[in-house]
Amino acid sequence: MLQLNALPAPMPAWGHDLRPGTVVLFRFPCEEEHPTDEPKSRTCLILEVEDHAGSRFVEIAYGTSTDTRANIGDEFRIAAPDEMAVAGIRRPTRFICARRVWVTLDHPGWDINPKHPTPVVGYLPPAAMRKMNAIRTRIHARRGIIADRRAARRTEFTVEHRRRRAITRPGKAVRG
Image (tube, rainbow, N blue to C red; front, side, top):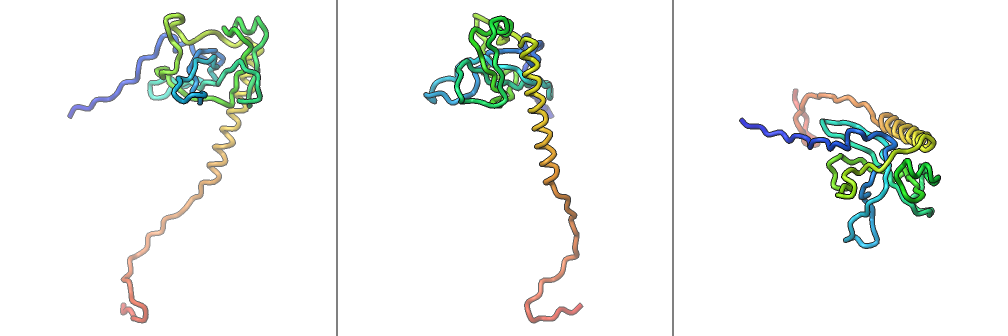
């Protein structure tokens, strides 16, 4: 019998150097004004990198240059010109870590084109790394709390095996 197993896609060269704090370009999944429009390429932040079953998965946080009250939660800002240069961004940017997604390196959302053959544009400077790590710590703590609550809700039960008995009609005696 011939059994064909799907092999994982080879990791692109830029995927080897990904680590938390890497600033990338990604077409972040979002609802645009016109649903037929493609999601636009955004500056995003790598929060986590994990390898599973031969594939690399990364958790990406949403980045935006707009300064509104929309999309808030677990966020930090890069606005100093020297920090922006290290991160590879042109405008002050907020990274909203409450809005994140897990993707693989072969996801079609990576912004790779002839202008820049890699989606990596820069890395967080040390001060921003400290802010990001504090947020990552809170995210991990929340995941642990949720896992503990799920475990506490699970109840143990015992399966009893009983002998089958004949079904009787009401009012009829069963002789044994």
